[in-house]
Image (cartoon, rainbow, N blue to C red; front, side, top):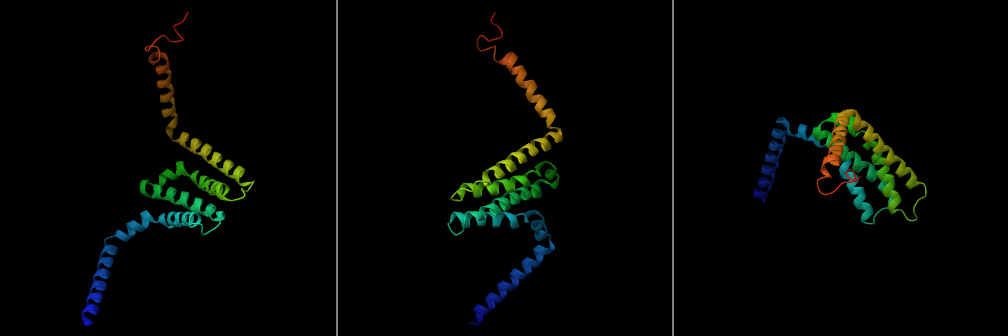
Length: 168
């Protein structure tokens, strides 16, 4: 009996030492700074699982959608930099829209006001995404796409056969 207790105590002491060493090396600080959005993402996914496991009502999908979208958003910013929030901030509105839309899809009978609210929030967030994307120099990308499309219309389509421009 004593040898099992000694083994357990030894394993506990080793685990404590490894834990302290990793803490002093900054591993937990890095994980805390980088992976904290999992505090939002995991409950969002768990709430989805609770609903789809038929354990709760569809009302739980509103916070589930919000937490999941926010968790993904913050995880992206945590890995690739918080400067992305200047472009991705409309996802905060999108999360609410997705939560309300999930509620609308799975609640029976379907709530009448949920779909218009979800649609307005989702469309608004996409419009705001476009405007925030355009402020980042995306005009250059749009201009280049338009130039290439024009060149393709002028030169690319006429080589395969007769084009509508060459008809008399």
